[in-house]
Length: 359
Image (cartoon, rainbow, N blue to C red; front, side, top):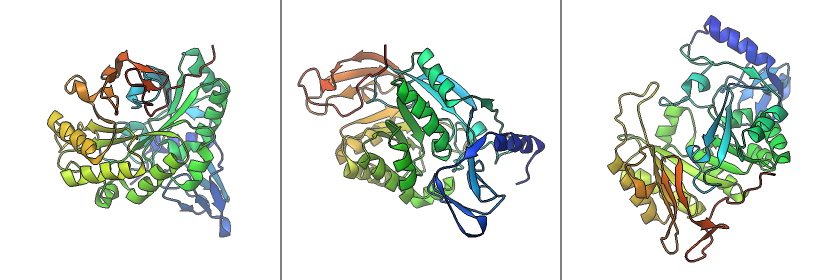
């Protein structure tokens, strides 16, 4: 694909908003091997990786640093995290680039900034300390790396999260989960919450996105083992990944890691290059929810159709089935969790409930 003049200008700008990476090893003849994502790109001098934003500068890996593409305050439920600080505000920030090429990407304008001539993207220089301070000024209890794929900008997130931790702010990733053991270990000291997209359970589907299913499954297991709070999202696309068999496989895999991991089954709507599929219906989400519960998951949620499946947006105690958190879309209508426990039977509810923002 030819690079447009606009893309070249953006590429030049991004090359100046970089720092030396930490997630790589040097190889022979000034090649480097990147460990930020599961592609493990081997990059010759003067070239970049699959993500287009990590590149080899004379035998040193340069990575995105010191800028944001956008900043916005969202409810934490939008990430979505349903078992972490209900009702909290999350300062969300993103950069540019992605290691996948999902045809239905809702953030393609930034994620595909250096791949698609129709995309765009701006850079706004900022320091890690200033970004963390903005979160505090906005009374955000959480700061989230999102919009593009955060794994490929992990050095920047690490710097931001290190500053946020000093202010008592909870940190989170919204990721496709195409990780490595190296990046999980690198993030562990500064990352609290990890949302991972499990886009299906067939490698044929992941090939469309430019990914490898096993990488995601391994990352899910590693994140859980390392003690970060994790929630998993599957965008259910009718005619692609909505068969009973595939949904059962996803649910069974999650159960094999832990039945307490929340699974969000969310509705697809046509976007970017994938407009041949219809919007996911409420009946399909209800079926996915039922399959998840039958597999043994304690918490399954339906998303992207607010108000149509109200009982599937709520949190119920897995022990006594008492209504604990009532939601409509991203709004909390009622929260009856007390100190991480069911108010009716005192069962501990899995999640990240402790609020630690300094006064």
